[in-house]
Length: 162
Image (cartoon, rainbow, N blue to C red):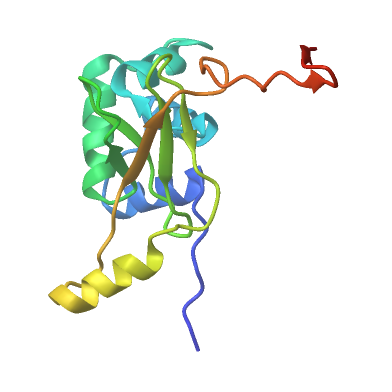
């Protein structure tokens, strides 16, 4: 019989923090709310700004400490968006996180398709003898809102553009 899979929810993470002997503060709750609502990687500054939207939130140092803690517990991970600061997102073990990043406006989209590298990852793990191998995959390009990709003009008979 297999062990039941625990839900990956804010309350489950708070329970994990309690199990680690940590206090559950309003700041920790707000940070988790922001992470679960974001649906994309966030910088420390974005996390702090979003916690302040509704009411008083944690300062930058508190956000940094919380993200460091969550990363050490493998509940969040850093995402390489080729920017000058770190970005973090939740690390739900039932999901896979790859991204597309617009090089013009900075928009980040989580790729919501099965991982195209799963078989390659398994092959690399076997070939090099690694276990628990993971990867991070980011694509960079121009999003539809910024991009030069416009539908080709249609031509009527006689070669006139419409």
